[in-house]
Length: 552
Image (cartoon, rainbow, N blue to C red; front, side):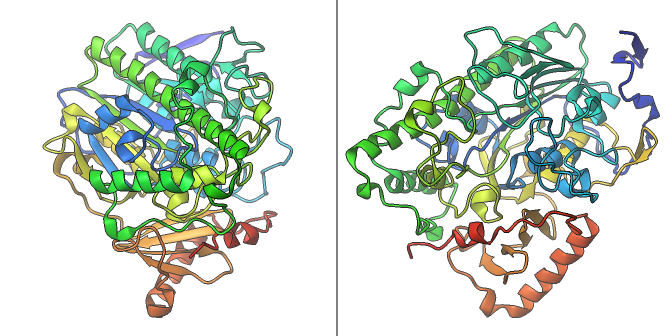
C-alpha cells in the first residue's frame, strides 16, 4: 500500500491527513513544565469496581498499581459515564458521549440490535465532528499506539482505530470476547486485519500488553509516544489463568457482606472514605451469604476468585509495562493515567451468570459473571453499579503518575472532582498539542473539560461549576457538594456528597428550590448536548431503577 510521508511521520493513504486540521486552537494550552514533552500512557480497566485495587480498599494484591499510586496521585472523586462505550467515546474525544454520537451503545457487525436510533446523539459510532486523543496527539508529532478494546463502532472500515489516528493497533474491536480463544466476529484484529485464529496458549490481558510493548520497542526515534492500553479485564466472561485462580480460592468464604465491611475499614484507614459515610445498604433482592447452602457458597467463592484473578493478572501486566519504562529510562517523563470505564457489573444475575462449568470454557462467552452480590462488594462503599448514575455506577478509581510534572503531591490523595472530559485537556496541556476547530473539512465541537495538571502541581484547580451525566435515562448533575440523581420522568433524589457520598439520605424534600434549579440546569445541558431527542430509543428502565430498594 502506498505510504505518504508528512511532517516527519507516515500515514497510510486513505487515513485522515492531519495537515488538513485547522490549527486555530479551541483552547490555549500551557506549555508543559517537564524538560521535554512527556510520553503519555492511558490504561483502562473494564467493568472494574471502585474498591477492586489495593490502594482503593481491595484485598486483591495489586502491587504495581499501588506503587504507581504511592508515587503519584490518587483521585477519589473522578467519574466515568457508567457504561463501556459511552465512557470510551467521552475519553477518546473529550466530549460528552452524545456529542460524539454514542449516547447509548455501538453498532457492530455481530449486534442483534441496531443501535443507530436515527438522531445525532445516538448513531452508535464516533462521528466526524470530533477528534480522538490519537488524532490530536499525532498532529503534534506523537507516535500513537493502541492495544486492547476499542468498542467505538466498527461497522465500516473508517471507524477503526487506524482510521481514527492510531499508527498501530492490536486488540478487540467489539465489546467483549473470550479471553482464552477469541474468534471472529468477536476476535482479534491486528492493524486493519482480522486474525482468524490466535496462537495458543493465549490470554487477552497478556497479549494486549505484549503487543503494546512490541510497538514501543520497535519505535526507532526519540519522538514522544501515546499508548492507549484498554484491557478487557475484569469484564465477563469469567476467564482467568489457573495459576492465578488458585491463590484466591477460599479467600471469599466470608461472603459479600463481610467483604464490603473489610474493604470499607481499609478505605477509612487509607483516607479514601470517611467513617461518617457508612456503607450503602445491600439491595433488598440480594440475599445474605448465610442463607446460601454450602455448595452455593463454594460456587460463589470460586466465581469471585476467578474475578480477583482477572484483576491480579491485569496488575501484573501493568507491572511489566512499568518495568519496560524503567529499563528504557522513560518512566520519569511519562504521564501515566489509570482508570475504569464504569462501576462493577451486575449483568448476568444476582448470583452470577452461566453455569459453573461455563467458567473458563474458552468456547463459552456472554455474561458468565460473578453476580450482583459481588459487584455490590466491588463498588464499596457506594450504591449502584454499571448503567446507573448513582456513585457505584459512575465513580472510578483514578491514578495519575507523572514524576516530571508532579510537584509536592507525590503519594497524595486528591479530592478534586473531575470526569472524562478532563482527560483531553490534560493531555493537550502536557503535550503542547493544539485542539482543532476543524478537521477533514468538518467542524469540530469545542471541549469543556479542565486539565488535571494543576492538581498534580499544587493539589487543586478551578472546579467545574456543574457536572452532568445521562445513560439509558439515568441522569445526574453535581453542583459543588450537591448531587441530584434520578431517572427521566421520575422525581429527582438529592444528596450531600460531603456528608453522604453513599447516597443513603435523600434530601430532595428539604431543598425543593435547589432541586428545581438543578433540574433546569440539567435540562439546559441535555438539550444543548444531544441527549434529546432520543429518536427510536424507548426502552423501559423502571425495573432497573426500582432495583435499588434496600434492606434498610
